[in-house]
Amino acid sequence: MKKDAKWGKYLFIYCLAKQQALQALHALQALQPLA
Image 1 (cartoon, rainbow, N blue to C red):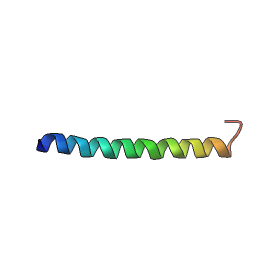
Image 2 (cartoon, helix red, strand yellow; image 1 turned 180 degrees about the vertical axis):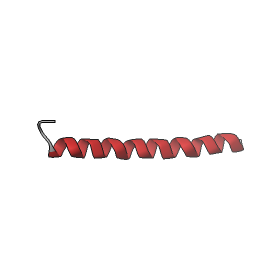
Image 3 (cartoon, rainbow, N blue to C red; image 1 turned 120 degrees about the horizontal axis):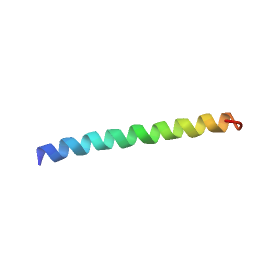
Image 4 (tube, rainbow, N blue to C red; image 1 turned 60 degrees about the horizontal axis):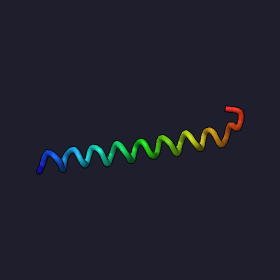
């Protein structure tokens, strides 16, 4: 159970970081219409 909770925490952090990265990517694309 402890192991699962640890993995869940890592997965949550990973998903959060991925979401922020995607938002940053979309923001950059919005600033550069040609890209």
